[in-house]
Image (cartoon, rainbow, N blue to C red):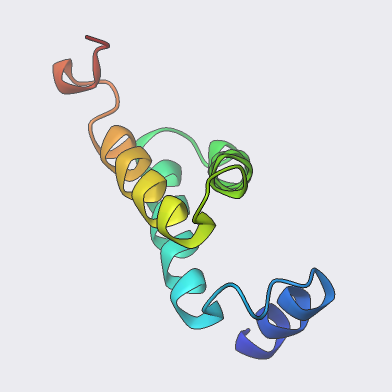
Length: 86
């Protein structure tokens, strides 16, 4: 999979901006949390939304890490009182 991700990053001209090895772990962890805590179909959609939001940030790589952590926590607590909006 690392060769595929590196190739896609190159095609999208992201290879100089993102560490593809760290990216894979980040996305797999995020989608696992969403798939198990919320719904399987929600996992790829969530990853897309995090990517769009991160792409709008001044530092997309840092934003992706921050957003993934925030959304993973939300997914892990989904359905509990801890996930209720404040």
